[in-house]
Length: 287
Image (tube, rainbow, N blue to C red; front, side, top):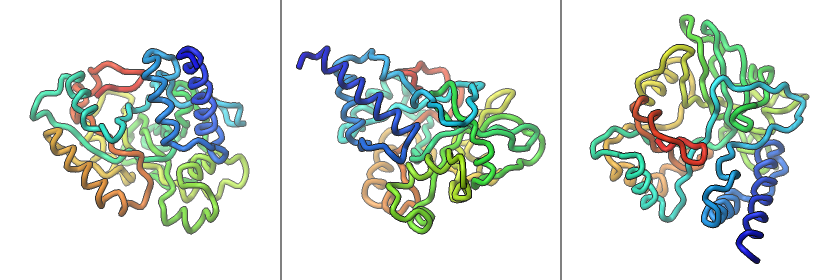
């Protein structure tokens, strides 16, 4: 098969798999490993292919009202294994990382992403990521989910969350279902009988005030914890060597003991100005 035909084939396979994954997760058939392998193959053949810049999938006609995000919801660059730390070194070079700069390492939660909006300290709306620009308004189901619905004071803004079902709840309440990620995504979009949404925990990872920005990612996560949100496990580090040590610990022991699925680790600059000043690669933040 010619490379041009293979590119067309790969794009079609990946588009169909992404549509299932995001819009009908209970029927998704392609494994994460297979999807990542096909995506890596496509990037090797055509690094500028439009699919590689796609975030999520086009929002299907699901019966939920569609909402345009005030600020686009992106995704994250994924570092493949087993060459992850070679790629991390390449990232550091591209980002202009300087020895001693403060980084933050945290769990990459494996569920569905949503924007949770507060006005004057009160929860008013939850919108799925969708294609990063338009998502589903799942507010009525989100009211049943586990996260604070009232914040101290009159804070207004958005909190980016990952909706997950913790493993103990999944094993107890969702017998026979495929995995906690697809159960969380499917349950969140139920048009009828949404009672099981109470088993979904919204894990906060980004704080976006209506006015201004918080100074660092660690400040965001600390604030979320103070407000009563679950947050990913995280820690501040000052070298790429520290990141590799943490990664090896996860591989050997930590990951096995978690009560939720993760899709790897997130490594970013802690400083907000540093992190947000970097360019995007395939619609995903470099920092």
